[in-house]
Length: 410
Image (cartoon, rainbow, N blue to C red):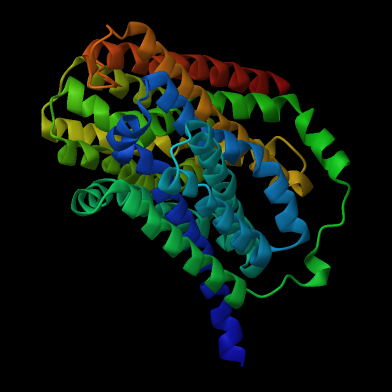
């Protein structure tokens, strides 16, 4: 019996981490299914951008409610329900042709997916020593990014031999199995671990903390390379601007996630050893901005392009550093809520980036159509994606100012 108790935390952690992997597959799949979705619904870029961005809107909106529910109910029911909500959001694409229903479904996919990373936070905090938190979180994030990688070329290959609707059906089946396993195997939370604090007081303390909100906002302005580019627009960008065939183009964003996995393990170690969290965030902003401009304008060959995508991913792991810095901006008893709000704001900007990029592309579009589907030339992609280095510059200036104010306060 004692051996079962020792092994159980690892089972719970593995299942929560597997949901994190699964939600990443759901998150990046529209970039691979874009052409099929455009043809089925006869869409423009701004409409597809709104569809993709609805994921991040749902993800952001549900962050605080799910975070509070995990503290009060525990991971058993909350994570299981989150998975079911995620796969429920896939059904409109599979069984109907209502575009508004598809957008609502994408919102539900994002809403349910927010339970993945928050569930991982909660499980590690409940079942493991505090000193293991950052280490296990880094491993979970790295494993999760495997899902992003396998949301690329392997999913593309599966679509080629079946159809994108059939692949979504497989996702639904996998989600039902995973939710059932979590509901059966994860134990109920002990009553003494339940949070009975005032929700209103906790929210007020955190949401009125200027440093917490500004740090989260500047961190959100840096997320475009991952959420605006890698998740959706990257595959079609490489096809149109670089002339790369679709199967190879689908592989390139996978390198961003692979790099982020390496960064998730490496950046926190470097930052902790040399106490340079703030400086590494600034380096990440400069690195992503510089690489992005070079990728857009320099027209690298394939090897340099692959290396650039990997480095872009390493810098994208800055999010872990932003969350850590923000925890220090508030009393320790609010650490869980600060984490949820910071991640919520960062993910909400996924909607902003997708919508703005799609709108700019539509404004630049020259009116070319292929059948009933708009055809976007390289200029449209270049102008649309220039949004990302602009926001990185704003974030860099913001973090420089925050560091200056912190130094003056000391």
